[in-house]
Structure formats: C-alpha cells, structure tokens
Image (cartoon, rainbow over all chains, first blue to last red; front, side, top):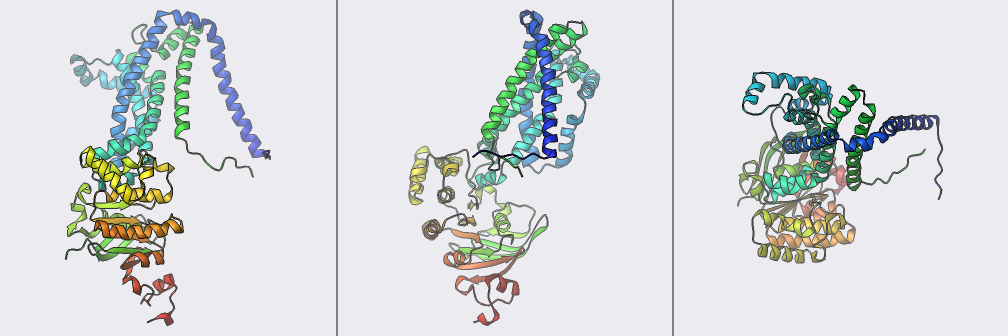
Length: 272
Length: 242
C-alpha cells in the first residue's frame, strides 16, 4: 500500500530547516574537498604530513587507552557505589565539557608550569612543549566525555541483574566482569571510537600546552594551522581531507555499532 | 522452630511510597503468598526481604539472622523477577550454571547438575539458546532452574505467573508445588491473582498501600474482614460473613 503523506506548514518549515543544515554542511565540506584534492597527492608524499598523521594516531591511541582505563571504573563508582559526594563529583568531572578547550589548555599550562610541574619534569615527566603534553591535553578534554558516555551506558543496565548474580554467589568483582562489563561492550566500543576521533581532532588545549612546532608537536590539526598561517592553503585543505577521511571512517564504525544495538520501534511514522 | 523468614516492623521509604510497619513470618518449607493490587508495595517488600535496600527500618531475618548482616553471596535465596531477570548475553546453560561456577564447582559436577535441573524443568532442548529467543514459560523455567540448582533455603518469586497463558500457568502451578516438595525450600511469591494465591499457598498476606492488612489461611481468604478496603478488594459484602 502506498504511503500517503499530508504536510502542514510546521512540517514544511522543519523540513526546509533540515535541508538548509544539510546543504550548509555539505557546502563547507565540499569546499575543503574540492580545494584540497589537487594537493592531496603532494600532501601524501610529504614527510611532515606523515609525521603529523603518525603523531596524531599515536597520541590519540594512547590517550584513548588511558581514557578507557579510567572512565570505566569511574563510571562504575558513579553508578554502582554509595560513594560520598557522588553528585558533586559528577558535576566536577563533567564541568570541563562546558569549558572552552583553550581554557582547559591554559589550566594545564598553569599546573604543569608550577613547582609541581617542574618537580614532574625533574623526575623525567615533561609535559609542557612535549609530546606527553599532547596526550595530557587530549586526555583532559576527553576523559569527562568518556566518563559521561560510560555512566549513561551503565545506568541503562538493569542493576537487578547484578543483584541476582549476587544471590547466585557472585562477588562484586565477578558481577562487574561477568554481567555489567559484557553488557556494556557495545557502548565501550562506541566510546573508544568517539573518543579516539575526538582526540585526533583536538587542537585548542594542545595549542596552549605544547604549542605548535614543526615535526615535533605537529599533529594533523596543528599541521592545518601551520599551513594556513604560512599561506599554504592547499596543503592545509589536503590535511583537512585526511582528517575528514579518518573521522568519517570512525563515524561509519560508530553508526554500524549503533545500528547493531539499536532497538526497533513499531511506530515508524507519525503522520497525523 | 526458627522461621525461614521473619519480617519485624519493617518501614521503608522509596520516593513518595512507603512500606509501613510490616510484620509476618514464614515457616520452613511453607508456601506463602503476598496478595495485593498493583502498586500495593509487593515487589518492594520482596526486594526488602532479599536485602536489596539497606536503608530500611525494622528487621528481616532469614533463619534467625538479620538479612543485612549476611553477605549477599551467602544469603541462600533464590530470586525470580516478574520479567525473570535472565542474563541476556548468556545461553540458558550458562545462566543455570552461573551460580555453580561462582562456587568454583568442577566442570563435571556443573554439567551433571545443569543437565539434571534441565530435565526436571523440561528445558533440555533449549540449553544452547539465548533468553531473547525463549517463550515466557521457558524463561520462567530457566530462571527457576538457575535459582534452584543452588538449593536455596528461600525462594522469592515476583508475580511469577503473570505473563503466562492459562495452560502454561496450570503446568507451572504443579511445578511449583513439586519444587516445594523436592527442594525443601520455603517459597514466598507475590501476586494479584486471588485464585493463584489460594491454589498454591497455605497462608496469604494481603497488602494494600504499603501495609500488610491481614494474614489468612488460604481456605479463609474470602471470609469477611474488619477492613472495608479489603472487603472491597475481594468483592465481599457484609452478608458474606460466616
């Protein structure tokens, strides 16, 4: 049977706004792609671009691994334990989500330039103007986001299942790794993909903490910035295409995983 | 004789709802029903008995010991929720063997016990299936098997038959009576079905608005009460008084 749609003014208006947003995003992305494509070959031959790709992937992978290792127990603490000041802790952890990344970078710069930072440097842990600083900046920007994702995932898992497991003799640790963790796996994978791609594109906090030095602290976003500031717009756009491709790939993985865990609804079309 | 479950002056506040001064006891091997309308607080009471909430006032004692003083892993209770609470990422076999594995039983013993329990519950043919693919009756049998395989002292059932069709219900009634005989465990179940409560339990507690209004032998369930709300619940008129 053919679907018969009737449109009212509100429907038409919302569809026009949606189409406008789609066109705007397409236009901006296409302008970079069209402008950068002629330079892509040259960019892919450049040692500097490969350095920035390598550094971006390296730092994003390390900061994502640390994020996962910290976010899972933190989310468990916030959702499954009776820890004191839970609400306050949650607000503090999520506060950086509402802050500009430049401000976060400035905070890090102040901390790691202080006596504490200098003591760390003397112990061999140099952060300011160093690769470790990139990882630290990505971690600071992404950890609250990762905790929030994991907290939402764990909140959605029925805690009665863990209670039942407890009545069957499972310790808290066993309940965590045999019930909660396996049920969170799709969310964990999605968190890894999202955090990794966000880390790959992180620039604001990194700029404040480690600056942008060619072939030293030059990540892909930093490479775009350097190329633009030296007037090499074509190379900047080519780097942007590389970043776009990597981000699109991670988005595709996320969508695929989201599709697997998505619940189907019986109400497909509300058209009254 | 120590009661299998003793509930003493329990108060528990959950949001706007409250369990108020609830007291009753259940004898070893007894089948006891808690009967009440939806929203009466039946599930909350059942969860309190299992020790789900630490903030309650009063005391709940399992074989004489305060439930909150017994670690969850040592309470020896079987709990079956209305939606059965099967672990969705495990097959029926893994669901049933879960408790045995946490007790570090040998593989041979686990296989034997799971096989035996599956036979008793007539679920041998679905052992490798996941919960999502099971019917209501199969899920319930699996949940019961998972609890019973550990020989619990007390079995707590939250509206266990409400999602079943009449035929499966009749079969499961017989199964429950058989379980009570075979496994020597006290059974406490909550329901809103008068017939079900009367058919299965020897004594019945009637709950309304967070209070336990009365405890009656099942053959006296429809006798006149000194409480108008209960009489209204059962549709009893004053002339019905015996």
